[in-house]
Length: 192
Image (cartoon, rainbow, N blue to C red; front, side):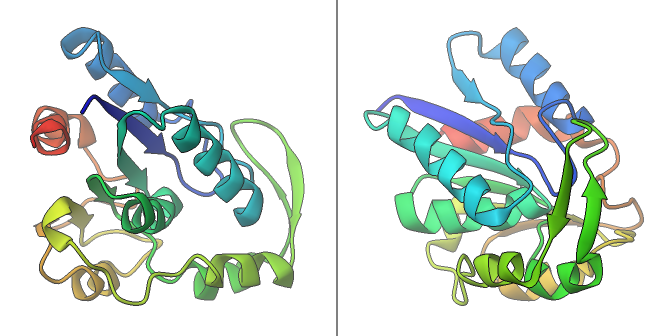
């Protein structure tokens, strides 16, 4: 079955983020015939969920695989568990509904300049997308850096037990030098 790779960016990010652009450049160079989707996710979880499922439905005849960074990793977990395929998670958010309680209120997305207000109802939307028990761990690869200043990498280390896991000392939430993993990421995602 033909595959499509869907890159899901994180909270307060966009398809213009460095990792998304590095992924796009890599695919254009090494896999020019592969379909790569990098949707611009809404700032609100339910809207982001709808956007992702719309992209998946547009490729109903293909096997979707996911690359998700931070909040995108949270969404990727939900989608991979629902639709199958493989997922690579980069410093994934494990309990964003706990973290974002501290972010309630007004925000401006630094990439899109969109103003939005995070409310308690959005926390509830995130809870609704939680996957308490991850299955098919052999189809998931988790990339973590212990220096992540936003998320505690140990939450992901615990949640994704049984998955392929790379834990690097140091680094930060953006996952420093991400691009060096791209060849192996695509081998993992595209192998049957």
